[in-house]
Image (tube, rainbow, N blue to C red; front, side, top):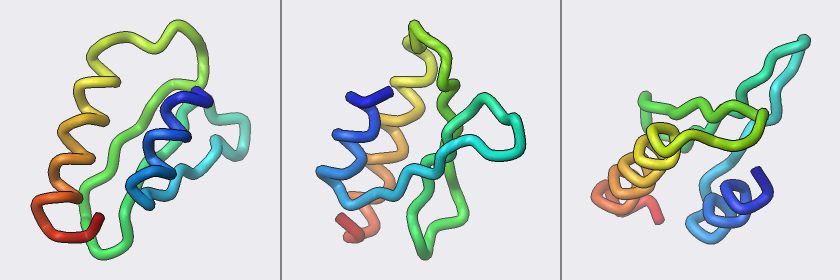
Length: 65
């Protein structure tokens, strides 16, 4: 998860830690309605990484990062 947080930090994308006993981190960007959830348990499956990459592309397309 540290790698996911580092990549998000590089693009200025906030990562919200699980709360209330949850098990997924929430990756969101102010001004966008979309978000991605990434499980905190390892290993992180490729499907979650693909979703994260698409989300980063969305942020970049909208000129946010």
